[in-house]
Image 1: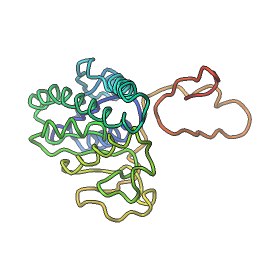
Image 2: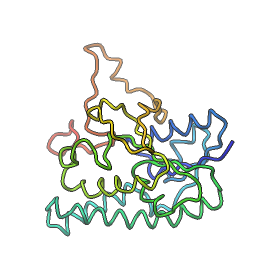
Image 3: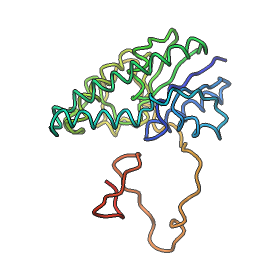
Length: 241
């Protein structure tokens, strides 16, 4: 059995659970797991007994992405369409810096295969691992040649970054889409190395359930546009924005 390295660039958001669920399934088959990521990834994996190497703090994805958005918006004077390419370029700079750290770790670990998420695809494309590498996509199919244009599903600020990541998926040896074909409008033109695999297990960092779930009343329904934690709005302390 071989060693599997998980390049999990951040511990927040919806990218991590399908990636870790895939890795844990490989561990159940006898493979050794090692993760590369920020401190939040290390904390999330500690209870699972997965070894983790923490990348330098200046490479943390969250602050770099927020900084890229802030820089892009300031440079573009608030124009979302103009800010998009700037953000994409800043994230390319982050990916190349991260690749410099990842390449050394992969050389030392000598993995049989490397796993990453959509946010790690540019890192591994820059690294060009000597072993096969796979991407676990936690969202719907974004390309190449998706059934809907990106403009129908993303705002103008995000389109250049998502389109760039989609264009790099051809570099991966395998792409697993953690969804069902029906959610992609029954799309049947996946590239040969792309596969729909359905939800990849249910995993999340351990936590106590919120006490309000035990309160009497109607059933709770979760409504959200993403899996990231949002900040509370100053205008409405009970809301998120």
